[in-house]
Image (cartoon, rainbow, N blue to C red; front, side, top):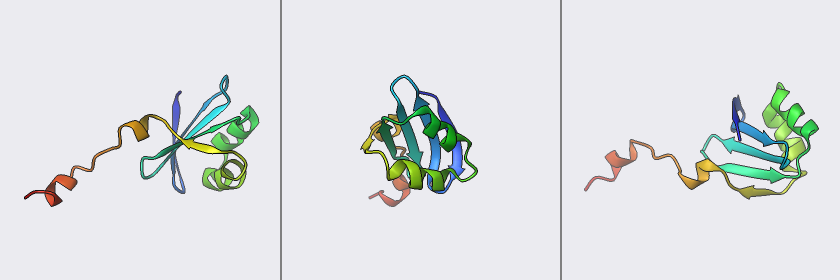
Length: 88
C-alpha cells in the first residue's frame, strides 16, 4: 500500500487499499493503525482535507474499529540518542 506523507495533528502518513477497503494511518510516534471497511469516499475526503487530523478524529476514529498493523509497528524506529543514555 502506498502511503501519502502528511503533517496534520498527530498524523504523519495515510494510505488506502480500495480493493480491501483498508485505511492505514501512521502517527508521529511511528505507530500504525488499520481501519477496515472504509469506503472510497471517506478516503477521498481524508486525503484531500485541509484538516486531515480533524476529519480523521470525527469521521474515521469514531466510526471504524482499529487494529494495530503495518510496517512501522513491525520494526519500530530506534532513536540514535538512546545509546548515549544506555551506556554502562
